[in-house]
Image (cartoon, rainbow, N blue to C red; front, side):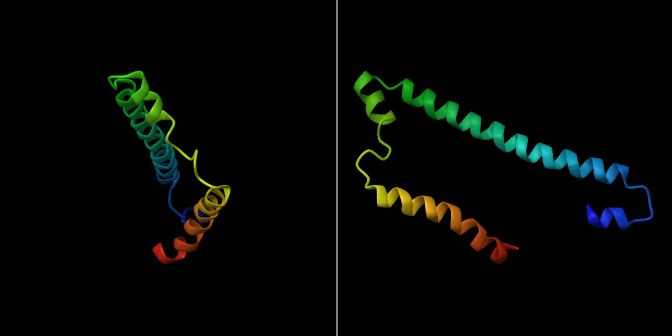
Length: 88
């Protein structure tokens, strides 16, 4: 956007295009994530028995030590900023 401000030509269309693309990218990601969760939950709730459904929904993190949760949270926060300069 800073380079567009320097241009001498009409930039209204380019600015609008960049804003639309930014909003659509986030919107499409959000919609696809919601669709993914709906499909997963639909599959889980169509399991044949109630015990299978409860077992499937209750499988995350019950027997994991707090240190593992802290480690995964730290990795989740630290890895993307560290990899960002390598990607770009």
